[in-house]
Length: 607
Image (cartoon, rainbow, N blue to C red):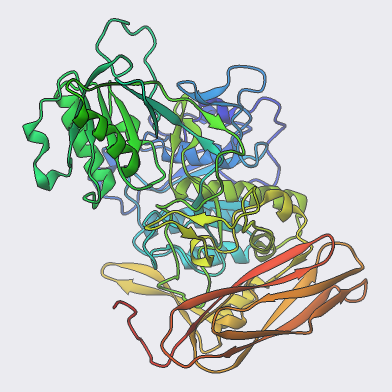
């Protein structure tokens, strides 16, 4: 759903709704016809099959009462907020101009999730109406019990670019969702913005954590808050199973959860500790954990207290002071916002789901990464930071909308190709992009596909890997399958090798002998162009490209090349990665390659 009163959906300066638009503005108890506008030009909702218990907890209208849809919509296509008036911010944090990826785009909302519940029936119905209404891009930040690849295929074959979120089950492998090759599946990356929160100890030593802690205006300055020096207490562990917390009186104190390596589920453990501090009358919580790349819990679980997340090293330094002092004290300053090239970015967020795809391992997924950690966007009448691949997908959808406006004749495959082949694999300092996890590592295609999204590069990609949308039918057979009392859509691969689908990536998950893979590129750059190939072979694989030079002119805008892959080793291996790059003095067009050498069928790589 959507919250139409948000400043992000202002239609000031917009002309009439395009004549080609065929959508509707459905009304409900809290949604009138005037809630649609020249910005929100369509609004529908779908309740068939949704249990009553969820419908009763939500509104039978397109209105968003759970914030997710509004946040995503404003990220994808929100109008600019704060240019001439009050800046957007979360209580002064992350202040600035808020605009969507395609701020002048129109929005149509199709509410198919109610109180967090949705299934393939509601989503497929929404996609069907979106096709009829005439949308250009579908941004789907959702996961339902059955992958909606069938409905998405219909949309793509009607010229609609479909963008899905990759899921939030990282850093575990094989967790990426929505992995059909005709959609753009988006991982989450971090941005060059940080929220440092200073902790000052009683000995004047300062430590810095991360938080979204803000001080409520008009608070009584004499009240007992974490912004004043107060008692500091260290707990060896705040993990519920250890039951250490129940022995500690936290009233008026700042509690430090040392944890070390005990935290199995940091989010649940943080919630447990914060609840204990709040209910016990404490003034603050300093919680040690490995990187999870989300700070929303420091607000959601901490009403009236200051909560800060630190790493294990910092927590040990704080507790060493507490153990050495007879009366340890500390205070927590309100969070500041830091944005600069000094903040290392872009890294793949730890929660972002990883490949390979458990459904279609012959296709590299995710396709690309986009900002998804601590993203400020509209929620109701205000602005809030959220984290997730749900925040990353609308960034990519906004870019797709801009590309559609710039290149209206491009197919969804061309738009996807432009985004994937121009993505960054190095950060602003020229260092390889990292992937947060256990441990942090150099990112590979199963973390971010082609790399981190590069909107300006995607606008002028030089070459594209295009696909006639009906060619997908040669590789997949899709049909409705009976599942209990309802029907679901199922897509199975055919006997044709999937690696020959003209995608901007190559994946060979069952690699036993030499094979040749073909690809075709179309010149969309300078008419007379010459590209030379740069090959980075996956470890254990000899990779050759023929020809190694592509020449384009008025008569030859499309060129085919072949990739010969030969295994060097002969054993049951893991995935290794490489790339194929076509470049000249103006353009760099790169695709990722993944191979896994095997000697046995269905070999479980678990031990």
